[in-house]
Image (cartoon, rainbow over all chains, first blue to last red; front, side, top):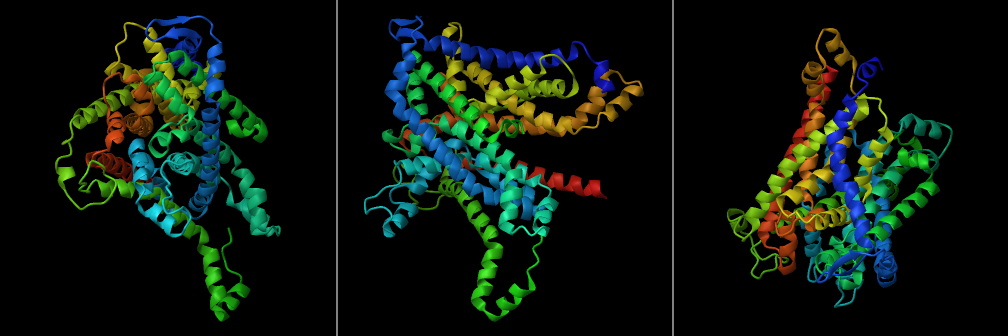
Length: 285
Length: 286
């Protein structure tokens, strides 16, 4: 550490200052303004005034609890599906990928290279009423003759799952890749079946990836409104849709601000509960 | 992992074609599954590319009507799309440069120095990454609404993009700096180089790939951002905002053309990166 001792003093603070200032002024301070706005009352025509109106929070939860619950429901289901679907692939790349690993990882992140909105619109095309998927499902009598996929909760959850899948697959891959294969071999040498070796050795060692992936998927999914807007109907709207329309279309700023805070608080609580359940050391990994 | 088949299973496989097929499935089920997974992952991309060549008769580009080059020839044939693309490119360029500079400085301080407030810095960098985008956008909007001198436009979009890019830049550069051999710098300083010269001649060239990676990542995130921009753009239209607006009345095939172009450029850069990495690795071995 001889090097860092030579440089104690101002240098680190000078390096930090511009970036942290930016984050402070345009991330932390705005959260303060959002809190300020959430306690205001009034209307857009007569102006809003700060009145400690805690009732905004109560109104937000009372009027929109359905959308809140739906957001966490959709995000939760999408997260679980993403985990189950991408774990085997992450495993396959980590243990069988060989020299193709990097190229396969590139395949995993490829959807990110297509603009978010455009790839969601592509799903709209795929799931459209006379598209291949719907016609197949109709022929198989999974949906009725006039059944639809678009504008249902299935479509919204499918869209969310697809859009955040790389966030799940990448951390899973990273944690699986780090596993020393000799540990698994040792388990098998000690007469563990392949299944047991997986459950007792591989799975626990990949837990940091599971935790990281579920958080990276769940948090943005819970605040999403694009999938519900493009693939769903108003019955599938999530809290993001409400916040967005309150802020930008109805200019009901206090309501929108208080909903944003409820969303954030709910997410923080869930993450904390989750961290407790799986153990905090997994979070800091 | 031992993948050698047991002799017993091989002999039974030879006698019974059904169990041979079963053994084959068991052995390759993961591979087959993964191929299906990739097909699912890449299907929407294929749709985007295919429909950039569609010749739609109505205003909806949902059903395949016939092949045409026209969307590519007249890629800016839709009013507003050209200015939207250029605004997105400008923002992404400026925002990625600023965010990478600020992020690299933070990463250097975090990895190199022992100082008070480290934990706080780490938390402040981590928080924007774990906040839903809609909250980032809404809170910045709340700030700008309360500052009467702010006019929404280029500057507000830029501020927002730099804000959410900084953390990504920090994470990217930090990852590289941690595995960095500090003795090289010490050697340079022992040989009489001052701090700035050491930084310029030793540190910077070694960290350059990470800085480049951070730049590209920030550029990609910025050019793709919809939510935060939507809250803070005022009347200016970036490319994702253009897509959003046109989606309500039926997105023109030109949207797919631009989407395909962005995809092609990003893919080319990434493939190049993979091959450079492979070459570097094989060079390191010899």
